[in-house]
Image (cartoon, rainbow, N blue to C red; front, side):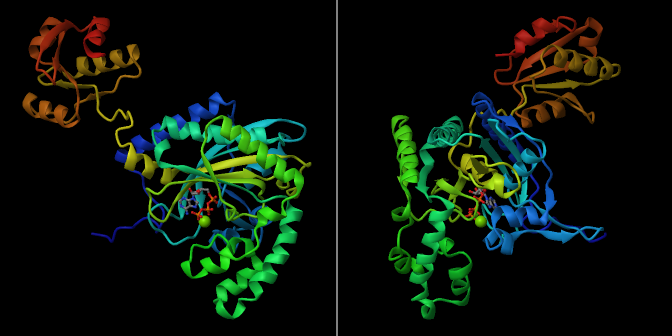
Length: 424
Ligand code: ATP
Ligand code: MG
C-alpha cells in the first residue's frame, strides 16, 4: 500500500459531525447581518504582498512572522490573506464602493497565518467579518457591538462571553504615546530578552498586550495611552459607552487593549471567553478611519469586526451542544423485493418536491427489511417508509413511526397525506 498523504499541519478537514454546527452558526450570523442591512462581498484569498504590508503595518507580528508569502510563476510576490479587512478595502476602492457612500459589508472565508497550531489556533482558519464605511460617529461603533451581542444571544453563548473595550485615539496621539512608551521601556532594556528589546522599537504597544507574567509589573507601570487621548476621541468613547449602557450591553474598559494591527484608531474591542483555554478572544474589531486613504482611496471613516469561526464553533459545542441542530433524519425510506426500487426512488423524489426541507434518506445497498430497519434506527430516523411486494401490488406505502411502533398504509399518490403523517 502506498504511504498516505496527510493534511498540512494546522489546516483542518471538517467532518459532517462538525459541519452541522458550522452551517447552523453561519446561517445564524448571516441572518442577523441581513437584519442590520449588511450585504455580502467576496474577494480573493491571494493578494499582492504589499497590500498587507501597507494595510497591517510592516512591523506587526502578522506581517513579520505569520504570513504565507510566495513568488508566483511571473515572480510577483503574493500573500495568502491573513485577515479580510485589507482585501475588502482594496476591493471597495477598486470598484468605487466607498467614495461618498455608506456601505455595510460582510465576508466569510479562510485566512492563513503561520502560527503554532493548538486548540483554537490554526494555520488555515475562518473568519466572518463585517465592515462599515462612510460613517464616523460612535453610534455605528455601538451598532456593530449590539449586532455582535445579538449573535451571541442567538447562539446561546451570551452568558459565556464578555466585552472588553478601549479607545486608542488618533494615529497622531499614538505616535506621541509611542515615543514616550519607548523612553519608558528603554530603562528596562537590560532585563528584557532579545525579542522584547526588538519589539520596544518595532511595536512597543503590542508589548503591553503580552501575557508573560514576568512582564506584568513593567506593563503595569507603563504610561497609559488613555491619558493621551484628545478631546474628540474622549467624547467619541464616552458617547459609545452611553449607547452601550442604555442597551444594557455590559463591558469592561481595558486600557491595555491595543489590538495587533496598525490600522486601528479610536474604538477597539474584543469579545473574550474563559471556556477555550488560552485562546480567549472569539471576536475582535474596531475603527480604522485612516486605512482607506492609506490604500489609495479617499478619506473614508470605517469600522469593522471579525469573528474567529473555529473558536466560535468550539464555544457553541462546549456550552450549547444541542443548539437546535437538526442532526437526525426524519424519514428513512426502505424497500425490498423485485420491482420496488423504481417506485421507491420515484416516491422519494415526489416527497422532496412537495416538501423541500424534509430530511429523507433512501436506503441503498440492499439487504432484508430487518437490516434496513436497523440502519434507519442508527440514522436516528423518526419514520420509516416501507415498500415491499404487498405495498407495490396495492400502490401503497407503509409508514412506521419508529418511536412508538404505530404504522399505517397510505396510497403512494397521496403525498399530502403521507406528509401529514410525517411532519410534526
Ligand atoms: P490572537 O491574539 O488570538 O492571536 P489576533 O489579535 O491575532 O488574535 P485578529 O487578527 O484580531 O486576531 O483576528 C480576529 C479573530 O480571528 C480572533 O479574535 C480569533 O478569534 C480569530 N483568529 C485569529 N488568529 C487565529 C488563528 N490562528 N486560528 C484561529 N482563529 C484565529
Ligand atoms: Mg494573532
